Structures are given as structure tokens and as C-alpha cells.
Amino acid sequence: MAIHPGMVEPLAERTRDLYADAELRLLRIIAQQLAGGLDVPGWADVRRPTAAY
Image 1 (cartoon, helix red, strand yellow):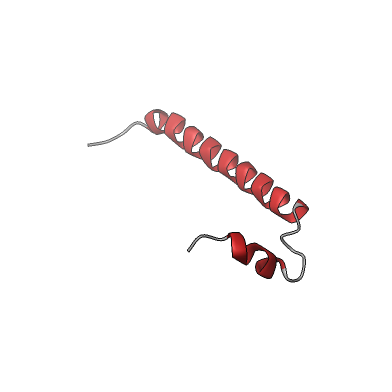
Image 2 (cartoon, helix red, strand yellow):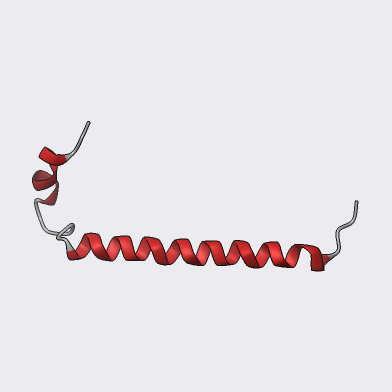
């Protein structure tokens, strides 16, 4: 069954927007983690007692 390109353009646009939003969300999370000292030497040792296994 043939599909007209105009039918999939809105889906492609929505997919693009979802990926762009996800990218921004991840960048914000990374920025928050870095601001909280995630990149400081020994951060894993500091966080280890609070990590649930």
C-alpha cells in the first residue's frame, strides 16, 4: 500500500521534536550533575554510601 509523503511528515516532525526535547533534558541533567560536583575526583566514594544496591 502506497503512503503519501504528506501523511508521514507530521510524524517525522513530532519525532524530531521528541528527540530535541530529550536532548535538552539530558543536557540539563548533565549540567546539574556537574554543578553538584559529579566530576570532582573521588565523587564515587562520596556517593557510594547513599547508593542503593
